[in-house]
Length: 128
Image 1 (cartoon, rainbow, N blue to C red):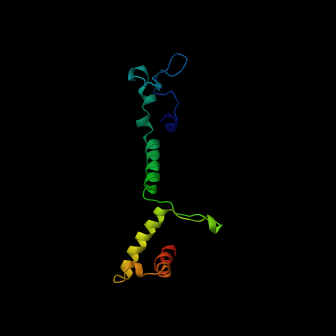
Image 2 (cartoon, rainbow, N blue to C red):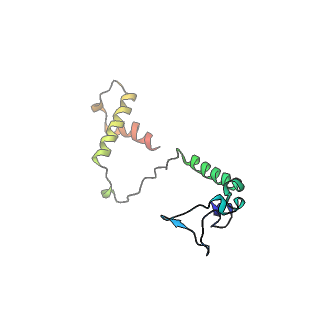
Image 3 (tube, rainbow, N blue to C red):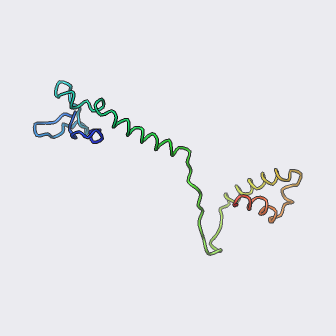
């Protein structure tokens, strides 16, 4: 906070006679009001504009990222023999294809569709 307020690093903190910070359990200790001039360590009140600006920058940055998803970019595997999918991916695709084909042709049983029909009506629509 001292850095943002552009005041000395030890302002508002307990120091020894040499100017070193008084640390307890790895944390610097705040000065008591009677130990120093309140105008020096009242950083929050005297530099509130700088803290509000930082707070707004953080808030806008966080809110701007909520709900954003990375676009799926896929991958490129040049050798056809190295391409493949897992059994789980195949089952997921089959369930989605089955639902979509049932919506398009509700009276046609699933096992009467050809691979060409599924490619034309499901796969091509998904990738275009």
